Length: 420
Ligand code: FE2
Image 1: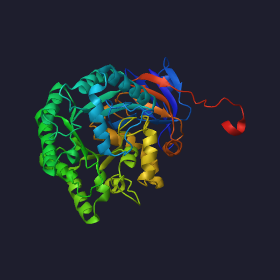
Image 2 (image 1 turned 30 degrees about the horizontal axis):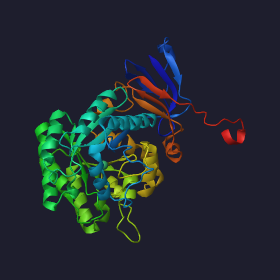
Image 3 (image 1 turned 45 degrees about the horizontal axis):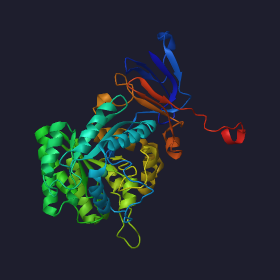
Image 4 (image 1 turned 90 degrees about the horizontal axis):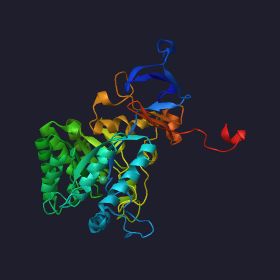
């Protein structure tokens, strides 16, 4: 039995809990230590306790494939990224793919991430990347749960045999079906790819996560097709629409109709604010669009929204670290989620909202009696301070096992003005 005492919850109120056999035994304001005389006691020093961070959208098979010294074509668009990746992917050794993924995972672990959804490119007849990421998924299991999305980067319909490769990856065990309808050769093929993704998900009983409308074109409306399919199949909570950047350019008359449809569909929205600030609006010559979906309206309309990193130094994005506190800070500012009430609840965007999108079972996530003892301690006294400070993770515990503890002693100085 381990008793964690003197922690703080989101509002800054005292929280303590006991852990045994990898699970929370007791959670409350005060644990009576005399009830457990032989326990180890850990003082959380009045720091914020939160559920682990959830990365709902990354490409672990792409990370660190960009050499910042060599440079890439400077357009910085989604389509130039796809073109560059298409040319280079066959030449990256499998061992390099795996080593790069491990490097990203180490960074994610140290940033408090314990659950990851990675989209893996399956537009490759040999599925090299997918096989490599399956190995990584197994290897990383003690540290994080990884979901693999069978993602046809070059188009499920446009890439020769794309749909068959997606299906092959599902047979091999991919947890979710992907698609990229706005990148197909025609609108019809895009719609067909959405339909196919839902068919395959039904056939193999898998989740769905579609790169959807990641383009500034206000006529890109594949999210409507996704909503329609989700309503028909009644599987909205198992479905995520990633990006939906075009929604930011929809006319209000269309958007508010769409919002009504989305309320019926109840799909999840995965937003990658840093990546899309970088990629979108490239064709705008003035007043560049932010390229991010309508986060405020979706949230206020009752939709589930979460934030993800998407890329770390890959052909699409020249930055990134895997630290979701950075992504959250960028997203809150870019989406103007800056009313105090939203800031108090902002951590939801990288914790419980992500868990919902990834369909993590309720009994497997969160700080409550009987659930697996997975949690973080952040260097802040409450949720608001954590956001202001982009707080570091001081402690990460996964199913009762401490992954790391980080010191709060940041500075080598005794100067009271600096350290007080
Ligand atoms: Fe992506």
